[in-house]
Length: 158
Picture (cartoon, rainbow, N blue to C red):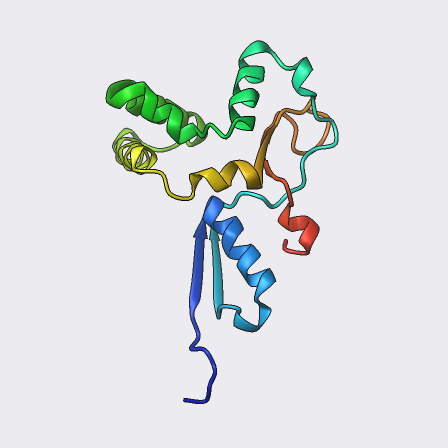
């Protein structure tokens, strides 16, 4: 062996994408030969026109309080039980990806439900790395979403 690490591909999905990109930034000498970022989170910085938590509607203030207390979306789905939890995941999926046909949506919703109710692993890192933000809608990211506390765009990854 020449003492070099063998080439490897690094694939990250969602929060895993953020962690994969941070790995590459932290370990440039061990960078993968290919970096695949699927359904990424954490690229853009938050919008400039953030609505403060005190201005949010009651439901969003409750969600913000739960997030701040490190209550994860996965915990909420587990608390709903099998039927209500499965339905909640299915509704959220259909809201985010409305173009899926019914069969594919059902398969993906079932997969997402099962990984959501699985025993927790890295989900608690989510709240320390990401933050939910609602904006007034004046910037390009208007409306809101979940943004990285340290956006990748600010670190030179675009």
